[in-house]
Length: 247
Image 1 (cartoon, rainbow, N blue to C red):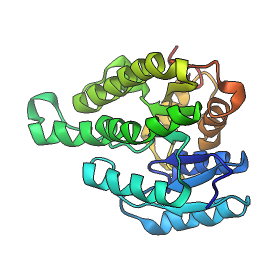
Image 2: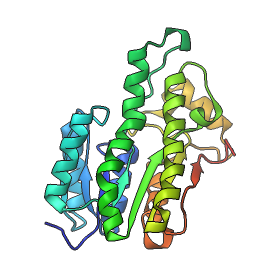
Image 3: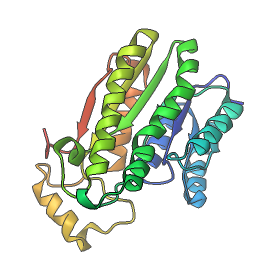
Image 4: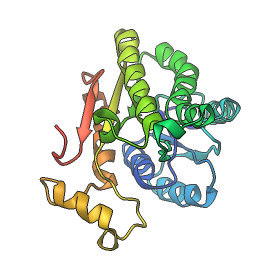
């Protein structure tokens, strides 16, 4: 099934940036593995959009913060396509909690979803990328994590860890034809949010030099470049896509 095409797995791809990345890579000719943790209906909608481009797609539901779920997702992807050439670790959680109120369970859960899931997926798919002499790993961090922010210490820790993982992978696997990069998005509202009714988003909009907030397709365009052959010399980099609010 789809052995001639390269395959991309995007975690958290039922909505927003994950959805946009799936559509971008499908348009570029990649077979797609979609993933969500809860709402399969969202993934089914994206699957129909992806199929319309002529590529093949499967849905592999599961919680990327649970190792057994990741293993099941990996097995389903490899059974369907035999390979995963592009790994986009997009799924993340960002619960708000003060540092002195943060429990070990709070920390472990965020680290598992935001960092260890990427580790488990990378362990599973990098051997195949090495064998094929080509691969892409893309992780995500964020402005608040890079700058530091009160109220989400575990999120900042997890996203810094993902950045460290990315830099290490870029050094170790770059000689084997595999790049690893990390994207730091600015403010990209969810697809069902009415910005005009949100004081938070209106305030963030005023702070941005472009006078607007981001669109998911703008993240996807950067992902498309990184996953193309023309993006093969971009490795170990942090791409900040935020309209200039953070340099």
